[in-house]
Image: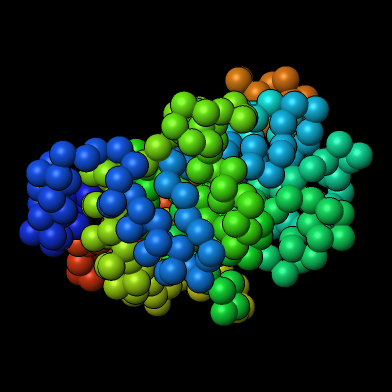
Length: 363
Ligand SMILES: Cc1ncc(COP(=O)(O)O)c(C=O)c1O
């Protein structure tokens, strides 16, 4: 059996370090907004070359609070994609702003800058670009677009920890980078967690207040905020995970290179020039995707679809008014994509077996 994903093998590799971190926090008597969060924020900011990192409770909150720190709210429009996790759109809608969904580029599965430009209206205030599957979007063109139209540019880096566009890590190219530490991510916590990074200290100052009921100093509030804090246990775990992030991303890239070398009969992920893909997911395309998944399941190989129903076709989002056919590349992707097994602890022999089975079925 080759599962699509499992987290235990990575835990087993890091168990001693993780147990030490968890024990340290338990024994400290300090569990919220303490020394581990402060240290993690400094280390995470330094890793990216950002001025500041602010820990929050989830990736969804990171998107919401980054937008609120940038003064986005009711009456504003925010451009993003329909080919993403629902969380991207949830984060936007939590601010009271309206998401405007634009089509993707089918090579990289990320926001097409031309489609983003076409979606701009007089109410547009921000773009949330998603570096989906670990592949950085076309940040040169999106940054130029945001600058020329005076739009806030937020990077949704939930799937792209450590990915690079030219010589910069994702998250520091736009105004703010929003991260999720959901356990399955390239850098996952042992529960929920998130962070926003930025090189603009004024955004960081607002985020620090927003995540803690809008508090400026103890029991003094100048703005309204929420409760969205990264806790000490998660921060301590993430400090361990951050030390191993580059090594884990290198292994993910090695697994992707093996898939690349041994798959011939399906559409493989593009590795766009000057971008360092960190393969949160290895996503192929096949015209008879459902049949391929069923055949692999019979051969004890797990696969998943990220994501089978684009946001604009979800029942919950019919009110956005986008009919089937309105985002053709997003809809084609949703019909044809399938994610293959990829996790720390997956052996080369298993990757080769997945390739062999696919080639037998399709070759
Ligand atoms: C692209 C994307 N954005 C945002 C999120 C939200 O993260 P979280 O689950 O931590 O709220 C996720 C993860 O689920 C994601 O994959």
